[in-house]
Amino acid sequence: MSGKKKFYPKVKESFVAAGYTFFDGDQDIKGKTRQHRRKPDYIAVRDDLIIIGEIKSPKESPTSGSWRRKQPNDSVEFAKVRQDILDLESAGMLDPNIGGHGIIIRGQIPDYVANLGVTYDLPASIKVAEIKGGYTVPSEQTQNVKVALSNCGKIKYQVLGNGNGLATFIFEL
Image (cartoon, rainbow, N blue to C red):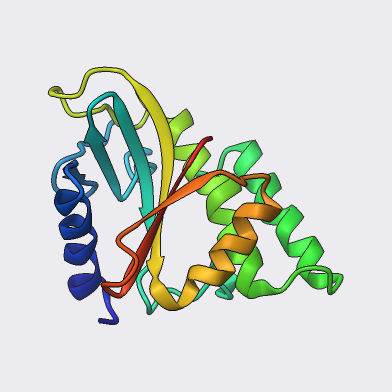
């Protein structure tokens, strides 16, 4: 289970099995404006909970240099997170296997939430409710994500789907 084509369907299966309605970022969430790519990989909904999330497949390494480079459409806040993590890693104070996940947890997912209504809208069937972050990774990254969550001040979280090759961390933003 290495690439997106095999990994992403497992994410949907995991959420559906847990009673969520799942919306795929590419197929179900329509982008707006020229920055339409600034939208989540998925939105999952159950009762009064909306999870806005990012997926990293086994082929997307948390040590990748591209995770640390400022992108043209980064918000000021997201660019600062990238730079902060890079600075800590460069100083030998943070393992890149953990730092990469911190970039997603502190930067990318909050950026998706901030762009709700700007670069994408919720599907029409979703009523506004509590929003949490979701981060789905291969099971072998579970321990690194737990450390990254702790480093980001996220000590309360739920793990969904651990055991089927992936784990989804659901956390307060």
